[in-house]
Length: 535
Image (cartoon, rainbow, N blue to C red; front, side):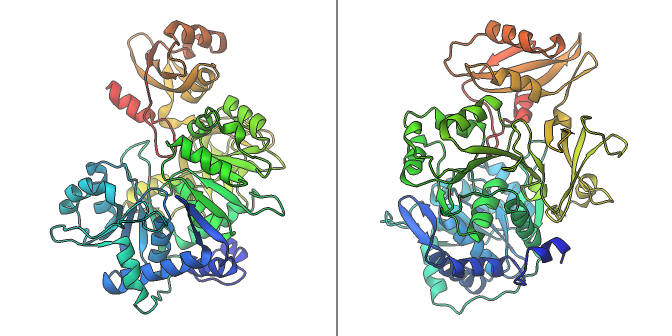
C-alpha cells in the first residue's frame, strides 16, 4: 500500500468495496441517485449491488478476476452493476453505448469480457456482436427498470450459445442467494478503461482499486463542491462510461454523500434544464459544447443558482468566452482541470484560492508533474515541453500491451501524456496542444488549440477544429472546420478575423462549414477523424 493510500485510508479499508459500504451506511437515508423521476437512497443502492453480486458469482459462475462489460447510458442500473461487480471481485469494462459493431468486438475480445450488461435498445447490434466474442452471459436493462415509470421491465432474449437475463430478474434471483463475499486487494484491477482512440487504436487502461480510490481522494482534497450547510447536489450529464463522469459520480460523489442527478441523454436539453430547475444545484461537470448548449436554452436564466459553488470543466480546453459567460450568468465559479484515462481521470485542477482561467491549475496533492524536454530534461517556467505525471493515480499499464506501456511510462515512473504544456510563474499548467496534432508550416510550429481559440472567440462560431493538410509550398497548411451559430458566416469573415489575431503562417488556408463536428464522449472535437476524412 502506498504512503498516499495509507494517508487517505484511516479506517484501514481493504478495497473499494469497504469504502463503498462505509459510505452506504453513513448516508443510508440520503438519496444517492435521481433518474427519470425516481430516487434511490444509499441503503437501496447498497442492497441492490449486493443482490447483483450474488447473482453474478453464484448464478453466472463469474469469479474473481473475470471481466464484465457495462454498456449503459446514465441510469441507476450503472452504479448498481458496477458496485455489484466490485463486490464479486470482477473487473468492469466501461463501454460506450454508441460503439459500432467493430468497436464492440475489439473491446470485448481485447478485455476478455465474458458477461455484458446492455440496454435493450442496443440489442440489434449486440446480436451481431456476440458470435464474434467470448461473452457467455447477457444482462438486459431497460431505461426504466428501477423507476416508478416502469411497466414492462427488460426481459431475457434468445441468443445462440449465450444465456440472457433481464436486469430486474438478476436482482430478484440475487435476493434469494447468500451474500457474496470476495476480498479484493488495493492492487486488484477494478476497471479496464478504454482510451478514446483520439491518437490511435483503443487500448485498455488498467486501473486498480488503489488507483481509483486515491485519485478520488486527491481530487477531493483540491476542490470543495458544496457550501458548508448545503448538501452536494451534482448534475451528471457526462457519460458514466467515460473516466471523467465515472470518477465524479460513481466514485467521488458517492463516497461523500452527494446526490447525483443522472442525465441519460445530454442532447435532451429540455429535460436537463427542467432537472436543473428542480433542485438546488451545487455543482456539475461539463465541457464547452455542453455549457454553451445549456446557456443557449431559453429557460437557462430561470435556474436557481443561489446554492451553486462551481462547475468542473475538463475533457477539452475550456473556451474563455464560454467560461466568462457562465460565471457572469450563474454567479458560480468554473474550475478547469486536466486528466486522462491513464491518470484515472485527474492530474491537474484549479482551486478556489488560485483559479486562473486559461490554465488547468496545479498538480493534484501528493502527485508530481514535469514539463519534459526532448532529452528528458525538466523545462524551465514558460518553456514548452511534454506534460509528464507521476503518482499513485497513474495506471498499472495497458492491458496485455507491455510494449505500449513501456513507451508511455518510463523507467522513472513518469507517465508521458503526449500533451504539450507550459508552466507559468505560479505553477499553473497551460495545455498548448498534443504532440501529434502539431502542424508544421514552412518550418514554424502551429498548435491547433491556438488557432481554434481565436476562431472560437468569433461571436458566430459554435464549434471548430483545425488540422494540417499536405501543401507543396509550405509542407503543411491549416484547414479549418467550422459550425456557425447563425448559418450566415462566410469563409471571408473567418479569414479576415484570423488575420487580425494570428501571424500569417497560422491563418487557415481553407475553411469548410459543417452542421456538426465529430466528438468524443467527453465532447472533445476529434481531429483524428477530421484528418481521416481528408485522406
